[in-house]
Image (cartoon, rainbow, N blue to C red):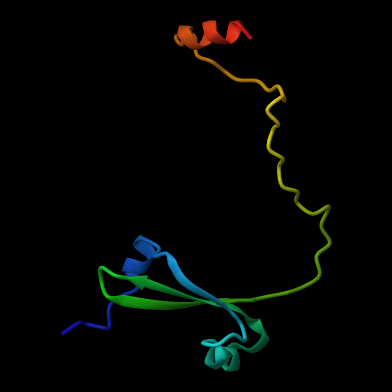
Length: 103
């Protein structure tokens, strides 16, 4: 017989991969939408095959308010193959240093 009253400790020692991610209002979230209302963002299902456990997690909005911050964060662009940038090479890495002197 499997003890279903296990602690959630195994979940937090190794976060299980998400098997299913549902947004609020999709099939499988109806009871949680009734429980949490507009605060519900999504529901995630995780499975621990080693323990034979399934975990249902929810993402909720705890607090909301107006934001008076600066400009939005921008993603850093990847350097093009022709861009130049600095590289630190250790003194003992003579082979790499000599190859780079050719360029």
